[in-house]
Length: 164
Image 1: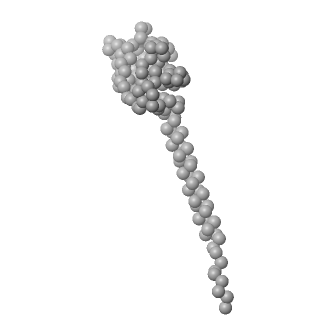
Image 2: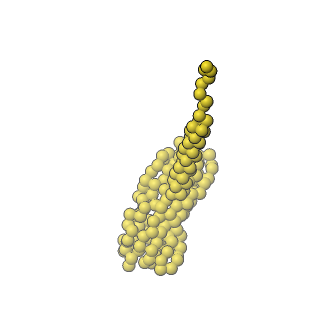
Image 3: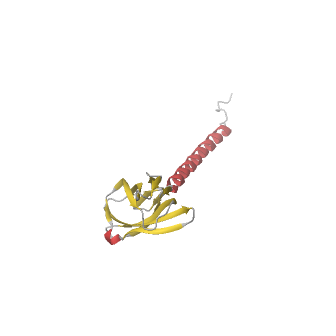
């Protein structure tokens, strides 16, 4: 009588390896999707992030009020204070397109931005010539590191309505 072990079930082993490979591929796909979704809502560089769109706290505002409130979250991803400059545009989407440049904070006069994420509320004063309609704010921050490296990162708000 022969005492050889029964032959290995290679079909079962192959199926197990195939299952493992499929799970790994599925995990990589899910991680890639999460990465794409995350980066679709954040304007970013290796040193600074801005959550977009910035939230408008006054979605309908009278011209008499004179400003729109916006909540903005920005993150300094370094261990150093960064200098942040800004330019802001008022974009009217309805009834007709119009663009007004209103605020400009050159990098030379920029604010110091400490490490970490910070949420701030800004009261954006209406620029001269503002009219009723559907508007949004749009702009860019210029970021300057202590070593002199400069980056520009865009931002925008939700739309809001200005009424007479």
